Length: 380
Image (cartoon, rainbow, N blue to C red):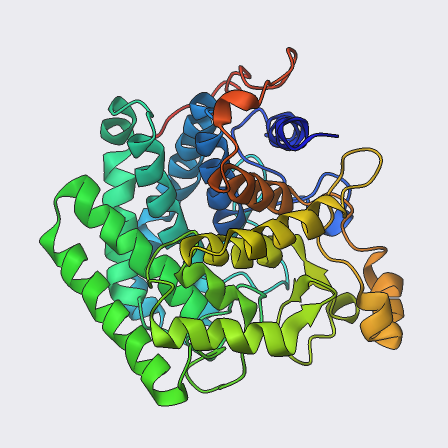
């Protein structure tokens, strides 16, 4: 399959699995992933915008506004809630049911990165041709969200991998900084810009302490999610010495036959390599001007599509740590064979590498024109 056809198929997969509400199921084939994560789905919406699917992205942004509307009191009271016992269960969640309702279970669900990623994705949506009227429809929710980030920006929370809830993580900070900067632009809020600068200063201080961007403020190991600081969030330039040192460490410690693992010692399904992270490295190489290295990332990802066009969550963990791979298979079944976030990051990398969005011909019959169910339209 040619690259334009492959990208078109990935775009179609995203559209196909966007719910009637506007949310995106994390994985259509994994029983554990029948939810919508704000962070993952905000990257998905960004990919759809890049591919010219603004209508689908707009439905997602309206869905987020509707899902967050009931949480405005908790966002406004975050400073008080954060200091109480069991705060992570009282603060706004990162993961929702597809209809936008809040999920109550034992799975860690307090992450603030998705809230920042959403406002960033919304700004990119409007920048790439989205209806400016959308912002006026959902302005109140955007305003409540950036103010929540303002309060919680440097507060410990679970990282992108839903681990280490007592720490502060650079990839979370990057999403928060991107969201605050976007809010400053969208709402003309000077305070949001000031807070974004404070978060950026904190990130650079962490880099100075460790010589590169660490896994967390108290864990100097490398974590591939720090690649987002460069691409696609654009917080740090590729030539920044700390960013270059981070990439050197990622390549030295996390490369698995050309794909990128999460962090040293990862045992989730054996600790395989993720298309999401490999695409993130490819975006770094493009920003750094190394098209050949970016092409190698693309080729690795394209080799992981199966015959049905699915692109899984991770690959190779059964060889890295066979015992832990088997343990997770017993617990959850096989790793997700189709992860929408994997498709999204592949789309972003392929388009950034020079494939024109016009080359992606979306077949008729996609879900691009799905209407909201009654009662699940835009929030005000």
